Each structure stands twice: as structure tokens, then as C-alpha cells.
Amino acid sequence: MSAVSLAAAVAVGLVAGLAACAPLRRRGLPVWLPFAAGVGAAVLASIVTRLSNAERTSLTLVEVVLQVLFAAAGLAAVAVTARNDR
Image (cartoon, rainbow, N blue to C red; front, side, top):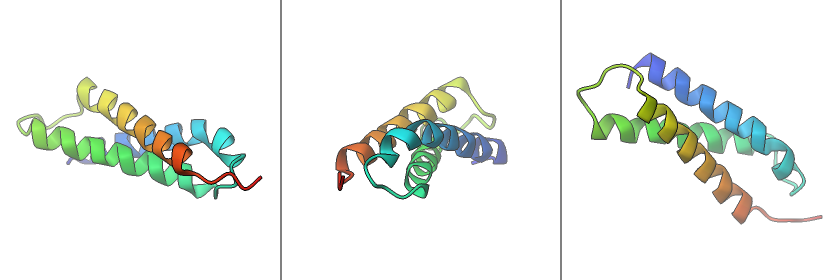
């Protein structure tokens, strides 16, 4: 994985976590959890993309789209499994 791919994955994960922070905050979750889930899922998408398409060395549109989709899926999993204490 290149540094550009890692930076893009972190950026996509942080933006997705920021978008999900307000709705998930009402469920009583810690602030860091949506960001961590988004970044982790986006990095996982980058790893999966690199494993499936090893000859590419630069950031591709497919990789960015998969990062966004994986981050959304990770945040959806957090939202579904989050407890609602209030």
C-alpha cells in the first residue's frame, strides 16, 4: 500500500466518521468510535483493492469508491450494534 492510498483511506474514513458522528452521538457512543470505524474500514478497503489489483501502484477511482463503501458499511455496523441508553 502506498502512502497516497493510506492518506486517502484515512481522509475518507475521517470524513465518513464526521458525517456519522452526530446521529451516532445521540446513541451514547464515544466520539472517537465513528472515526475509528470509518478509518479502519477505509484502510481495509484499500488493502482489499491492492490485493485484488496488485499491478496498480497509484490511487484509482475504484479504490476510492471501495473506501467510501467500506467506510459506510463499517459505520452502518456501528450504528446497528450501538446501544441506545437514552
